[in-house]
Image (tube, rainbow, N blue to C red; front, side, top):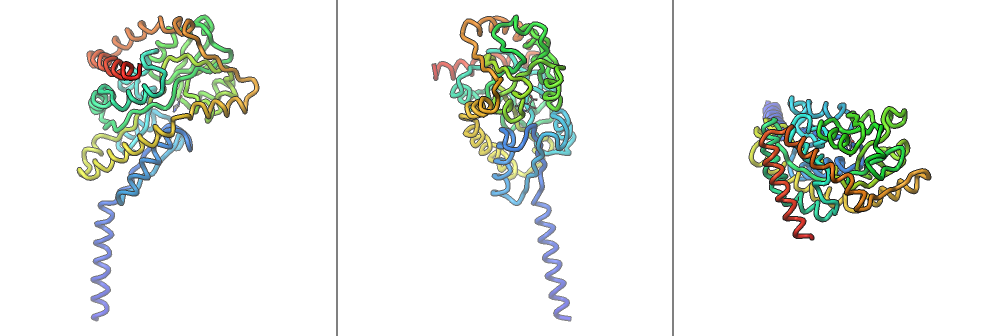
Length: 340
Ligand code: 6CS
């Protein structure tokens, strides 16, 4: 009898402990748009590591394709199936028009040090964007750059005329289409999953992406002529479903913010030198690949088309876009004068 009582007390204790544990230890689902070892994956795993080392929670990471395309993982986050998502403004721009600011060509500098300082210090990035995303049910935790955009095509591109009759794949936001129209190309918006096959079959003639992705996705195999146009950076954003985030305890909110900070620091270290390493790998693997770096005069021919894209950005966004653009320019001015 005594033994049974003891056992019962122990079982109830264990059950209570288990229940309490279960109530506190959550398994958070986090999806991103890339493959194993790519920049968004490096960020996601650093986030997971921090959360798991500093709490009883666990984070399950889903990579590209496991839950669908970029648009699908955003839908799943907005509906609360996923707690966290990493989606680049290339796709978010279709939902949040101001996020398209990153596609105004030649707005961002090319020098990495300046770009990194901008992301660290910019009021537009760190204060205005979180408010804008919040209006769409998203708690923006970090925006970060992945690498400079490089165009790949079936021929080297040295001037806007080279884009004549070229179908260039763009991510699915309307402003990026304006950018490539202004450059003289025929923009073709496609989700990521259709890009390699599209290049291989000639449905599209080129695309743009950072070098690490051109290497890791094997894009150079089907689009071998690389042109450094200096027109922008591939930027991305990591966020949470806002209702989920708001419902967390203060302690867990802080944990999530700290994990995002740690992941950001780790990822920024990771991307330094990554483009150069990836370009070396491409040139080693590919005999037919060429690299063209536009000179200042050639850049000018593309750059002079930027004002019409800026105009289109202002038309697509309300006054939020205009305020954001002013702040963006002010923030850029500050970091370029620091580094200039
Ligand atoms: O071009 C794209 O669609 C993809 N590019 C990168 C660098 N990351 C994910 C994105 O889907």
